[in-house]
Image 1 (tube, helix red, strand yellow):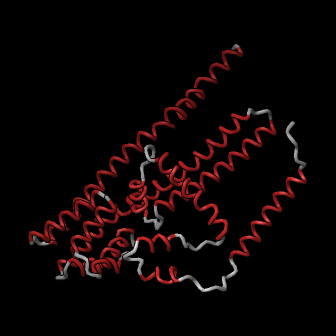
Image 2 (cartoon, rainbow, N blue to C red):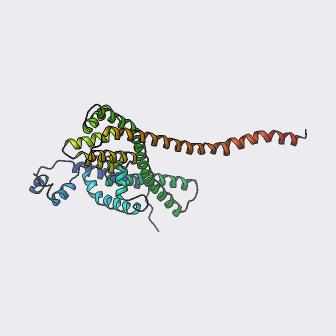
Length: 320
């Protein structure tokens, strides 16, 4: 016989556990009166040259619940590693996630995104638990089916989180593709007025507010710190992996190396970007035209046929 815990006792146990964890967390937030050890005081000054110092400081993260974070931190790390290994062959590994995070403009790291996926999985599992409980109250559902519902909802949460990231990266790349011809034309005007390419980019960044202007602002700030201009431009191209922008960067770098007038190169690249945008618009219009035929063939046409034939059938049934 399995002992059955009364409902009041179960509620009291849950509330007591929550109260204990809360008090434990509050006690852990009380500042310590003893001085920090010499190891922790020296570590910030040698973090650039000492892997041990970096590892020591990496474990001292700010956490609103230090005790709970210390207990659940290793479990979360193992869960993230397991999730990365499971999703590596399906949704892409760490490099693919890092690329999509960079394209979407997110400040999250790969580990942060995996933590977010775990949170979405837990939310999905909680929703699945509620659905399974409601289905069990309505009718008898096997335990395997209940576990399958919870598991499927958890997997759906992970996939939905990845789908949201893909949508954000794709949307941001589309916005940058649409902004590229205008940015190139502004650069052409600035170069025609006698400015250099770094100064032209700075002027465009000041007067623009799009996604591409934000990326160019970060790039030109890196150039201001002493990095080579062409290297920073190529790094930005490799990070975004936007084909029209990559072609423009290759032409700009080649023109700088060969000494070709940049104004003409940028004017040609702006025209190519406009033509590419027109081509993509025509392709999108063709796909939308085919999609518009679906309600016409499967909804409007059958309804029209029913309205045309039904009155005659009704009259024949009445015998007129």
